[in-house]
Image (cartoon, rainbow, N blue to C red; front, top):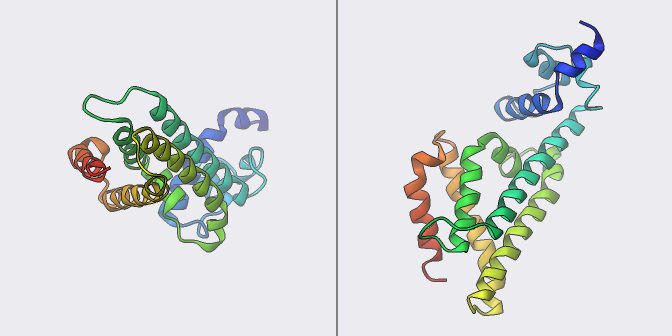
Length: 193
């Protein structure tokens, strides 16, 4: 097949999705551009049209996934909460939904333990957590909470949601399967706020 035809068929999105899956299931170090190409049924040379190296590909995955989560959080901050939920509960539930509906992405974003890769994720993690924290601080401020509460609560809520997602993600359960537990968890966290 001519190079141009291969490049048109092999989209950036397909490469990102395949690489994301392989990085999680086999580990970053065990995967090469060649193995990603083989997984997709293309030569590794066709991947270099989109990415110069494996690290660039990994970073593109990280950026894409955090941008998706930030978009969900921003939409949650301005959207209409589901019946029976306040804005804070809704934001937290949307975070949990993202984690459970996108387990490969979530694992790369928050659960990889490779020191080499940590640098790629940490800046984006901090940006995302700060966005979440600023939304929570605003909600708490709007509800009349003290500045001290508004500064401490966001991290505790984030860590609790992360623990919830981390626990259920390993069972391969969907968000809809554990929705009642997620709602109960979010309601419990917000009860005394």
